[in-house]
Amino acid sequence: MKNTIFLLIVVFVSVYLYNGCAEDIIKKDGGDEIDTNILRTDEFGNILGGDTTDWCIDTTGGFSFGPAYPNPVYPTVRIKYRILQNDTITISIRNSLGGGDSVLFQGPVLAGYYERDINGTNYLNTFKEVCITSKLYSSHTGCNLCGDLKFAE
Image (cartoon, one colour):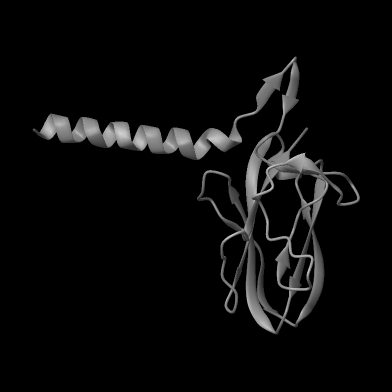
């Protein structure tokens, strides 16, 4: 009985980890790499395609976070965010599989529009996730407070 329970736990964890990591797999199409796991952007912030479920993009003047550009990143990436009222926020970068948070900014901010650069030289050839947390705002359907980044070499 103990072996069966242990086996079920191992299978569950393996399936969970595989599915959780599936979005970080780069697919090959005729020899070209397609980054389906990131929202690709150019150096001006124009969206080129990819995972549109990342980020909290609001064009109506509400709270927004991202997208980062350019993505894939080398060596510096810029994120934009709009805060609707004075708030306390944290912006962190972490492994795309969770954990390993590095706080980039933490503190009070006034309502307004912000841009912040992230130096990616320490993250070359990795996938990371940049996230924002807010005391006044929480994620809701259709709005993700994290976005995937691919740091290229």
